[in-house]
Image (cartoon, rainbow, N blue to C red):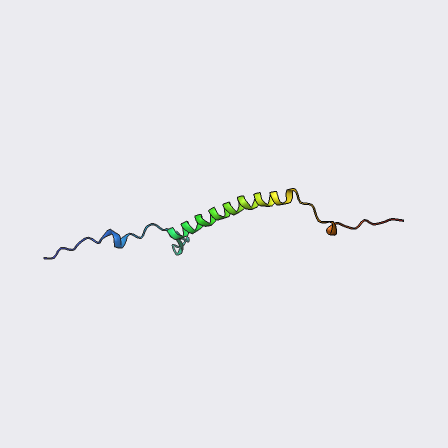
Length: 78
């Protein structure tokens, strides 16, 4: 009699997933590991852009003087 080998873990290892169900037990959506990695990458990139963007914006406007041609004309009142 042939023995059935146990299924290898490599074929069945899909990692983790989080599943959300509605009140009537219907699947709403699933979150897989790739979703979490993309969310963390976006969150990190957003923080980096915010930190460098706010610092650069503050430094650029600190010593800004508009050119003479853009200043409003002085009105002469009689």
